[in-house]
Image (cartoon, rainbow, N blue to C red):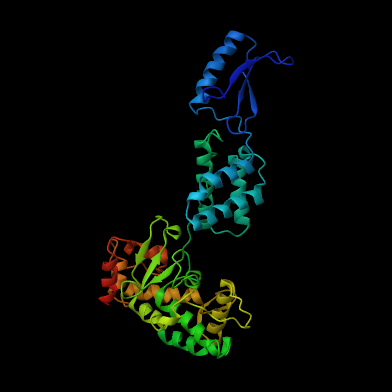
Length: 385
């Protein structure tokens, strides 16, 4: 490299009638070669001048021989390292799927035709249309970045075939309050009397909070890097750290008064670690997986005999599970039965939540307050209820 610029020169190989341009790759240090397509030196010098200008101004896209592995390492180091943890996980899942299904050696192997095959493979794997759309969005973002840094000449056309729209049928209904109480009563018969209280606490938390099961199991009293309960304002608030939030900003969210009451049942000296700690079947100190907790809650629903859905063709019954508690929360939200706190939270221009609305953390962010900008207001919103 001379004066900060890569070395570029003309050469005449003995085995070719054409002049070639040789230059140093600034990233690898290797000498690359490109034919001028002419045997006349004067014409070759003109091509050299154009090439030099394109190379120094970032217009030359290279030979597109970059390996997929090198691209992925560069993308992870320069892009994904600065994104939220959940976004990084989703992107990694997509890139892993590309490697597993298409096995690209070079980045340029990802042609429109192969991406179309990728879509077909995802469908064969029973991925939903919304999941496929999410995969393609991440892949398009990665390839667009590759074009921007000169690793690809253009983004291959990514076109997801449109399918006929069908009305999505609900896979269940919301349990009633009476059924919820019956589920609580049956918990000891499934998890045992010694562990029942820890499971009832979790089930009540799901019923009153609207949190997803995975979110509730990762809700903490005292971890600033996790979803946690904040008691600094006098009443519980939900705090989302920037690394878990799409806007990359720490936020405080108001919660339902009933959920606040549920949380405050925990004695102050026990407010450490995770908020919900469903006890395992065996006393080995291991923590239950989300999948295992899902199955045990469903088993409690079945023991209580709470049927929320019956398959029309097979007659197979689906019993109340953790996700059905979210449906109940959504129904209360939509009907305005759970306090003006919910109405305030869902106040982004709509009077009422749509039918079947099932709010979670992402849905609550319309009421989120950036820290330092009205945290006390959020607390007052809760106190008013």
